[in-house]
Image (cartoon, rainbow, N blue to C red):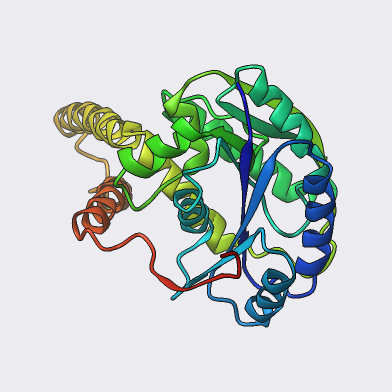
Length: 315
């Protein structure tokens, strides 16, 4: 595939300490590309620091830069989508984080694989220097669990650092109306020719990770809701299984009543069974509630994001 223009989409949330360093490395890499026009789109997700002001100064000095400031906190996935929808005129869109854990020096390799016919070139972390072993294990367990539930195979070490062709970007922008987007899964679901590139994620140059445990749980739930209805089927299976157990216990209780009248009344057993079956019912109701909540969020049809300001000094 030919490529004459690329767009870099980089979400930003409280990266004041590192964004200038990231831009310098990114700019050096893009300048080295021959006969390729480039645009850099920073999407600022309502920061509490001075990231937006730093980027305002960067945009003045670098006419390739466009800054999108969100009106509220819409999250990492919506920041990526906002940037992609502003870059539909590019031959390819490259998504990457702005904390330098995604090395800009890999961009030429992404472009080379795109030229060879890949519509999606994703990166696969072979190691993450700044992530604890516990977090790595939990992440791998989540993706194994998700792949068991879903018909869409998702690489457990795939990052949001990837290149997508213009037709994939247009499909994502125009063909999907859902709010709870799990982009890693969607790119696998879309298909086309996809190629993976291995890399080692660097340590954060400054600051701390913005993905708290609660946000990781929200992303996990979004992934399960987007690509699997098997939890609902599991609820049915659990319900049927315990109904069978209940029937067997009823038969056993009847035989005990008929042939051994000296046994105590069995209040302990009754209480244990009530607690057990109530727990199962609450579990199944909880699964139904999560899916119902997802439907509720979708049918409201609110905007997926709102831009407060666009900053660009290119005429």
